[in-house]
Image 1 (cartoon, rainbow, N blue to C red):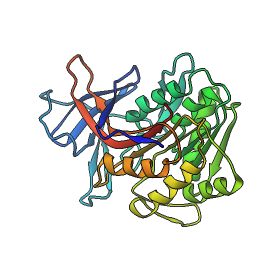
Image 2 (cartoon, helix red, strand yellow):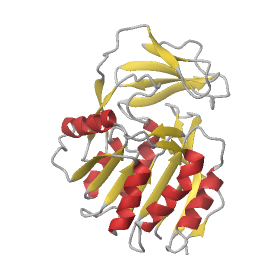
Image 3 (cartoon, one colour):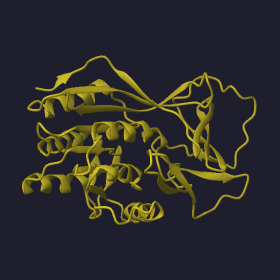
Image 4 (cartoon, rainbow, N blue to C red):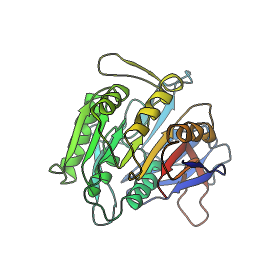
Length: 299
């Protein structure tokens, strides 16, 4: 039976050549994405910024709606179709396109970098591991997992999956065994259970609210428990991990850890939980929390 570790942990990522958190405070953050700098809102940055003035190429100005809205304002030219970035994965560098999206994101989530690294540690030495990336977005995590074996990439957005495939080509990984699936994540996972499939590892990064390709409605509080239980049915005692991240919701990491512990009750191993964070550049960089997570791993 999976043991629930009640003490939370912090999984913090640091910058690399193509990304860094330069400064944060007063509800905003200043980041570097390759040659460009951007300011974006972040309600977790409750403290004061350290730099007196911020210089950026663009800023996302949020709308009045708590759940979204807003627009980019640019001080300098920024390529509308994006620009290439890399994430170092040992000798297996992942290349992808960053782009200023209408949703304030830039085509990938840099706070996920330590998650990708942790998954690699769980799969070290494998070349045949079967993994699945649910809500896979533009595929950076999928390409990181492809180093260890076949990956099933699932996202409801045809545009996101197309960008993920383009990132695979940009990385020279278009020949790797990845199933690119445009589908509702919950429906696809339920079908995988009925097919009797198994996986060595599953990562899921669900939104608070979303719609599937056929108009299916996703509400995290309503639909996450069923999806997590179905994911657990695709694992066995030889599997390595199940990793869940949750953003922008009013719940604790202990709550989603309890859900994982219930779903993984028949599996050996441990369930851990805590915060994802990004550390500012520099020796005394502060930690900016970005999300909560819970993960099951085999001992």
